[in-house]
Image 1 (cartoon, rainbow, N blue to C red):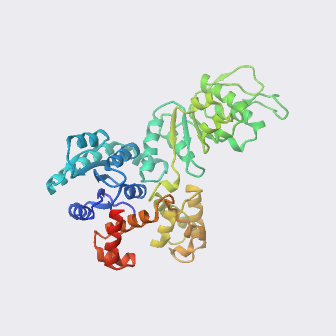
Image 2: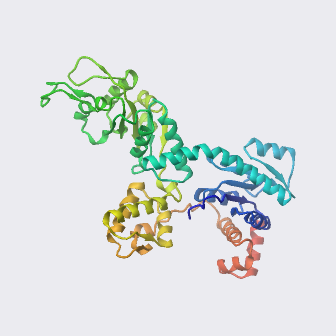
Image 3: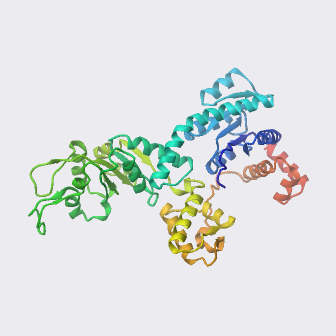
Length: 448
């Protein structure tokens, strides 16, 4: 589900189900959306699928401590605050928690007022930090047609804003179909060069024998068929931006010539003896790992360094959480309008299948699927059976195949209990066992 606006999402992590139940009840009464996790491992899974504003974690837990979770949040989730609670209050523990980035440290027992005050302080700090970047991101989305509310895309929007304000070379990385050209256009149209040309060049789609002439132009008589002098893409982009897509597909010989352009801001037309100055902002893109190509001597290291001044990594669609649903609805509205038919809606089952599919073709694949559904669906509601069969049965999961069966079973039981607020009767019903068996399994898991 898309996160409701104005309602902070909290993730409470504690191996005590009673503590989880109390914190969930108390914090929910204040209007927060509260998720719970009985272990650090479960918390990490929740952070992959949910957009969390504040993590509240216990200090001591089995296998992995809360300090490790604090470190993970600080190292990987810049847009999430974290605070720690513990029944083992000590100066050393407080210092360790703060050292690794905990916003606050509460020692058990604490009052409700102390808890609420600490949560409000953490969320207030988060709100102040977000304000500027959210406004910038909103401008980017509205201006350049890039849709997304996920944390991954918020990072892209921030990078676009910074890249637009500089003349430094920009390298955009990401899988095929993620929208690298849209990002390049956003960089251009957000810059002082917006009124000048934006010239996209698919380096992989132009034969090697023609690429130099296409990029730099040629003079009359330079080769057979050169009946007149013609400017290349670099000259066409004068004062604006040239977008070199699939830069990894260029030959080593062409890379040498591109390196000179980056170094000297000059191009030499094929058949000419003198170079000409060009004023262009260079933005390149690749769906391959250039570091890996450099290691294999397939890409020049010096050119890589010249290109890799500002890097914008566009995330794959599978890492963008609910952006899949936002994009699906956008494309459905676009293509139903074009087709002159009533708006298309999606059942919960269809939305769930869309959200959990891996999308190897990324946004491009999603757009194609939605366009096909607009054409092929008879009614006004898309249900799961209307989707391609591969999509219906390709829900991605981290299976954890290295773990023991008892460990997986115990964690699943704790997760089910947490999801029903510690209600053992309801948990037993979901698990398909009686309360006595549930008690025994909880006891076995605690002593194992």
